[in-house]
Amino acid sequence: MMYDDEFALTEDQIAFRDMARRFAADEMAPHAARWDEEKIFPETMLRAGAALGFGGLYCAEDHGGSSLTRLDAAIIFEELAAACPSTAAYISIHNMAAWMIDRFGSDDVRARFLPKLMTMDHFASYCLTEPGAGSDAASLSTRAERDGDHYVLNGAKAFISGGGRSDLYVCMVRTGGEGPKGISCLAIEAGTPGLSFGAQERKLGWHSQPTSAVIFEDCRVPVANLIGAEGQGFSIAMAGLDGGRINIASCSIGGARAAMEQAATYIKERKQFGKRLADFQALQFRLADMATELEAARVMVHRAAGKLDAGALDKTRACAMAKRFATDAAFEVCNQALQLHGGYGYLMDYPIERYLRDLRVHQILEGTNEVMRLIISRDLLKD
Image: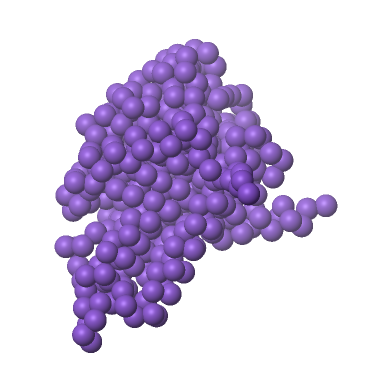
């Protein structure tokens, strides 16, 4: 009897996956530990990835994008994160910011900014969170007052990936009254007078990407840099996050998969009590549960990506479900992989602790997993 696997990858998707896997193995994995230890932002490697299309995975082709689907991108991000979750996550953030310009920007804005973003000659950051507005993003207070053909910005953004290094900051600012309808989206170029940055944050993980506050002090930004219409910024930000949640979930799966594979290799080699760890049934069952959780997470993520591609009515809920489940499951798989390594898993000589540190923040960013539960429950309970 023939079996039609609706979850099987297409020939093109297999080719994307294999290309990303080779790139990750050759250009990322050998250097990831050093990037982490020395806090290196690997610009040369990022631009090499952009030459393969990673700079604008789901941006349109007219300015150099790859025009792939969200599912295609999810497959690619899993492979990149298997080598270095921190760097793969930055590529995701860059793609999210670039897509917002591509999807909502005017022809002029797209033509000015996208070509260099696609090649990663320029790097992009996504700026929503503020010191006083995290999960309650609609309460943001960074103000943009209209002054002729410029906006004058005052305020600050917090925890910005690429902060201090990116060339373009896609920022949500308040141009109107309180609440989400008073928020607009602006593209702000590095070097703009009045734009400055806080000290680099000292983080648990994600060491291969810079992170800082982004500060605006009478920062004058051309009205021509508006993305979409005034008052549309919050909906643009949320649209970006739907895809960002799929990407970060895929990064979690990739990192956890690599940790699980390394744990499987380790327990086949390590002996205690006269036999291999892999011969103990309790550890066999633990590994089986880890693999099962990751497979379930992957199915959820791929299904949500398909809904996002199709514009399904429940796409936001599906993305929230996938992000919540996958990032929680992947962190636990990483934690179990470390446990299977015993004391060696706690050492920096093995990569497990790096995966664990990098994956922990995935349960917080792109909306905390508590906010994911809020999104899901509100959708379930709406009239």
